[in-house]
Every structure is written in structure tokens, then in C-alpha cells.
Image (cartoon, rainbow, N blue to C red; front, side, top):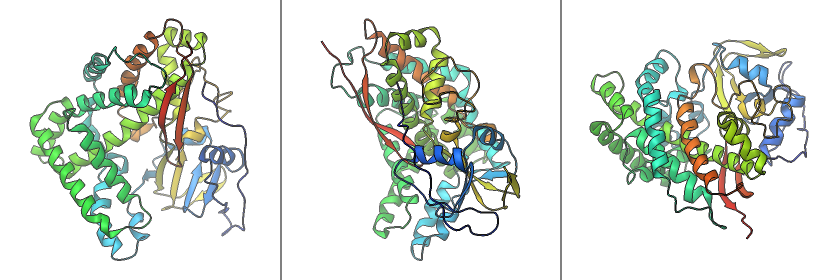
Length: 405
């Protein structure tokens, strides 16, 4: 069963800056504990080291996800933190990132979402789920020592995304590699100019693959985006951004949810019964506990007040989804896996930036868990999960079953 240490450490405070902003030192050792501490002690927290407000209570996050005073977070401030010539070198990649749907506001955001919607119809979701189910090899029997991330979860998720994007299985690993290289480049606090050529090559290759994929029209998404490019509704650069965001936003987060789910299934027959009797509730609880993307960064378009704190227009506001989903006021015993919970979570966001791929993720997870559970006569064994938990997301590094004979 997924658990989290109960150890807590209160953030340290230093002298406030101005009458309305309280400074607290960052505690990076365990971001989840830090977020929980903030929710308990300073639910509207100004953090000077990241120049951001952190909002951590469920009710506040739930409401602010729909508040039109918060706009999408632009990656542009990253440039201001760089010195020349790093700024000039990084600009093409920041401009690429700024085209991602998550960084857009209406009306452009509305146009992009409309172009993407054919990928997420019920018929398309069912098609992708069927391809995932057919791809799972019965040869994988969960033998002791097998890494479920590498042998089952990531291959299944890659199959789902290949089908959704209309990209061949042979090309998909390169798409992942190029997207990750570009994200790593843009996310640096300083730029190694020696990496610029490599990043430019990755972007060129990603653009070429996207162009060929749209021309082939091998999926409803590829066909829809291709038509939009041909009609001038979106540009090729927008199409590349759509593909890159779907890859980075769906692959590892879905693997993380699967990791939490199999960790719970290893809790014994009662958990297996819970999955078999209420698979939707079980998967929903796994998504809540995983909350793979911890943060929803926003920008205050206008002044707003939250719990008596004034947030000026232009400030960065971070809605901490993982803290909201661990809020005991919303979810009693929040670190316990309970598939019978009622009420929505915020792991997929809400409002205009709600995750379009939530249904695809859910229908990818189900056939994988069905196949996994069916391989054991009684119940799956406990698993050992090695997690990488950062400020922005959590990722399973490996999952090993522990089978006793």
C-alpha cells in the first residue's frame, strides 16, 4: 500500500519583505513533506527563492483552477534569468516551449484544444485501449526480479501513445528522446553553449518527424492536426509543440499511476477484490495518490486575495496539486489507499487547462492492470518501487516484484 513517512519539518522563516509577503526558506530534501508543511502552516506561501506564491489547500486550488484572474504561466521569465549570450542561445527553445497548449490562454488555447479533440473521442479512446490490450505479452508472468516499469508499464504506455499520435513504434523512442532533450535544455538555470547545437538538432529532427507523421495521417490526431496546418489554422511549430507536450505529459505520468496501483494491489486480497469490484474507483484513487505532476504554474493577470494574502498582478502563482490531493480536510487519511472515496481530485487539473488525455490514461491503465492481476492465482505479491520525487513530478525508476515460492 502506498505510504509516506510521517516525519515533518516546518519551513524556516526569515524577515518578511514588505507588509504582505512572508519569506520562507526552501526545504528541498522531500518536496512532498515540504508541501504538506506549507498546507498546514502557510497555505498561501510567498517563496522568494522561486519568486512564487504556493497555494496548497484543496478548496483554494479547486477554486483557483477556474479563476479567470489566473492566466497560463509563460516560460518567458526564464530568459530574464540568463546572461547574454545565453539568452540569445536559449530564445528559440523558449519560443518552442511557449507554443505548448499548457502555456497558452484563450483565444489561442481554445483553437489548439479544438484541433486536438479528435484524439480523445470515445471511439478513439476505445481503439487505443484495444491496441494496448493486444500488445501485452502473456509471456511476461511477473517473475521475481522483473522490472515492471521496463517490461510491462512503459512498453504499454508507449504503445498507447504511438497509436494516439499516429507514429510508428520504431520512431516513438526517438520522439521521446528529442522531447526530453529539449525540455532539459530549456529548464536549465544556466546554458552550456556547447549544448546549443545538440538542442537545435533535436528540434529539427522532431519537426521533421512531426511533418512526416501529419502527412501520413495515421491517427485521428495526426489527421486533425495535419488538416489544421494545411488550412493555416495552426503552424507546423504549433503541431510540434502539441506532439511534444502529449509525449512528456502522458508517458511517465501514466507509468507513475500504474506504479502506485500495483503497489496497492500488493497489499493483499482485499485490494484485489477492491480493484475487481470497482476498477474505476481503484484507478481514480491511484491517480489521486500519484498526482504525477505536482504543480500547476499560473500567472496573476489581475490582483487577487487568497486567505487574506494579496497577490499582485504579474506574480507567479503555483497551485500545488499534490498538496491539495493530500489535504485531510478533503481526503480523510489522505496517504491511505481507499478506492471507495467520493469527490473529485485535481491530479488532472480542472477548467480550460484540464488534461484532455485523462480518459486515454484511464483506459490505458485498465488493460495493463487487468493483465497484471490475471497472472496471479490469488493476489499479486508486494512490489518494491524506487521513486524519484522532485519538486515538479514523481517518476518510478523501477518496480520489482517479490515472489516467494
